[in-house]
Image (cartoon, rainbow, N blue to C red; front, side):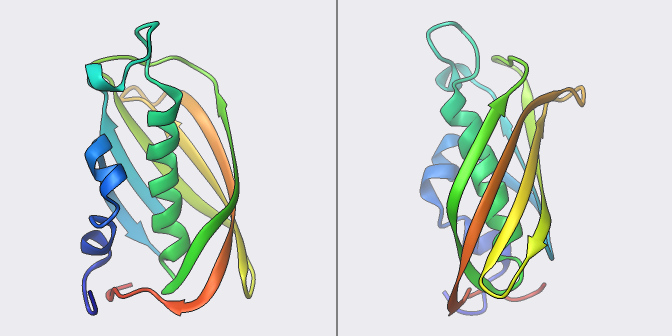
Length: 138
């Protein structure tokens, strides 16, 4: 897995990949991903399942947090759902670094729909391991 691109590295997140999350952009302290909402993403009420939105936000967080080249894992995460979405929507998540320390970091992820309407907000803190990620290019 050495010397792969960040996109190739995150394709190994099979849960997010099977959920339909597509990484769009990654740069230092920033990540962007999207998910096209299909019937498989819906809850019993016909709206996007909260876990699907969380998965989208979580992969986007991982892209931003690992962008510095050090393996990072979430310590905590909080999501607030603000607006419903459903089948046919495309959701976008943008993760921005709010703080980076020697071994921790704090991130804010906004999830919007194809109209730019805010669907949810997600905040997470991460712990950085003393281990390099196996990708290059940032």
